[in-house]
Length: 477
Image 1 (cartoon, one colour):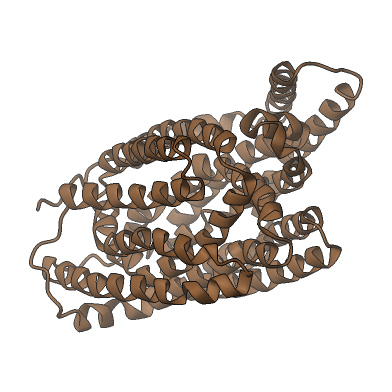
Image 2: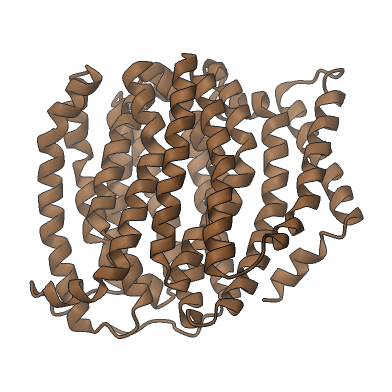
């Protein structure tokens, strides 16, 4: 197989990623809106439980190999073939293990339906494990055009199949088939675009070579996964699948801006910044430009989510999901901090400091567990939301210390650059809340009016404080 497109600029790659992500997200929003009206909240809650464990096993399947392939420039085709052979054995073992532990998962939640549902979801784990080497090669060779088209196709095809199954009465099984089919399409696409030749089982040497780098990254990913999913695990256990359904849909809705902005940018940072791993100042300059853009966007998103939480939930999911409205409003405030913190892992990887990244993961997991315990003590999904939102805000302190101070060797004064948009966001949210406490409109009219008002207030604030120039500066990169 050829080596792919090495000459694509970072700006072009970002355009490909943003374009495909927005198309995929638009399709996923439509698919979710349809499925939310065909499938009960309880079924969504059951699938949320299964997703926690398939995601956990997926992290076990990667073991940091994918990012190591991107970072290490001296790996050969023989090494890639050996690593793919390793992933094949791992895929078989993990899939069998997941099915074997399904009775334990069902017993923990007291719901026997989870046994069959876990087994039905196991193909997703198998395909995701096989994909770790091809996916790493796609990123290393910067094939962002193929990655973008792949994402849209997988979303549309799997979503259409899920809707068809839901209409036929498949319920929660429609959702697990959607995930498994999407993973299968991604695997087939990757192998067709950048396959692996000379597959072998002589993987000891390449694994040993990348171990010190991938081990810390794997440890961070595993810890971060628990940090991000422990709420679903415990809400499902102590509050039931119905309450988990409400919480999970609200949480996932706040995740769209992360997918649309910070995750897209984060996915292209390492393939380009890895070339500058011995130039921390160059990586820091890129960091500040990207973080400033995410700060400007995140401040706007948080203000809109807070002001229009009721309209957004009802427009997306329908009137049966009103219990998710206050949860969404609380979690929406934390979106700002999640957006600017999300790409930090890519910068740790680019610096080659996966040890710092691992420490951040440990600290932030402890913070999340503390917030979750306080929220669970409150006895409702709303108090859990307060605890989780507060934890996400506090995560920024450890990121600032280990990345900005230790990794880049910079003072904390550089973070003052993000204060103007925060002030503008708070002001816009307060004014919007005050205005619409006296105004009543229909659902869609209210949603449009609130977004427009917040947008105009922020635009005026950004212009008055000179923030708009940062969009132009980043576009020139």
